[in-house]
Image (cartoon, rainbow, N blue to C red; front, side, top):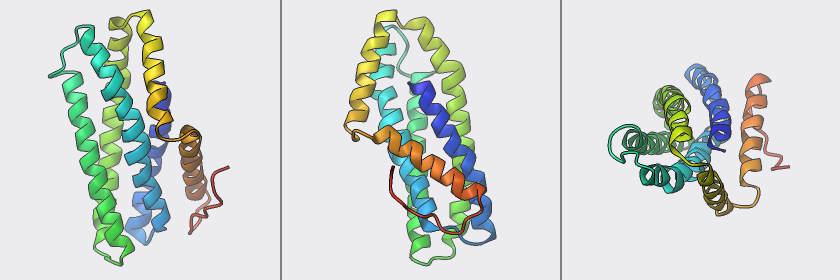
Length: 188
C-alpha cells in the first residue's frame, strides 16, 4: 500500500518543476498552488506518513529495528522537515494570493526544494526501508498493517484515495494542456 502511494506522490513531485517554471515566468492559478499544498499536507503527511509513523515504524521497532538513527529516526526526522517545508510553501502561497509579488520567488524556491526533498525521501523508503521491512516483518504482520493503514484513511473520508488520485490527474491535464486556469468541476 505504501509503495503504491509513493507512485502517486511521485506523480505530484514530477509536476512541481513545471509549476516552478510557470511561476518564475509569470503567474500560476492560485488553485494549482493550493492543490499542491493540500496534497502534501493531507495525502503525503496525514495519510502516508501517518501510516508509517503510527503503524509501520512501531511494528519495525517491535521486530528489533532501532528507533533512533537509521532508518526510522532519519525518516521520522525527514517527515518533520517535509511538514516545515509545506508550511513555508503554504504561507508563501497565501501571501501570493493576497498580492505579494515577492512571494513568487519563494514559491519557486520551495517547489524546487520539495522536488528534491521528496525525490530523495521516497528513494530512501523504496530502496532502503521497504526492502528491510520485507526482511524483518513476519507474514502475519502484513494483515495487521493493512488494517491499521485502512483505519488511517477511513478517518480522512470514504473516497479519500479517489479524490487525491483525481486531483493529481487534474493537475497533470492542466499542465500538459497549457491551461491558464484550473477549472474545478468537482470530484467525479
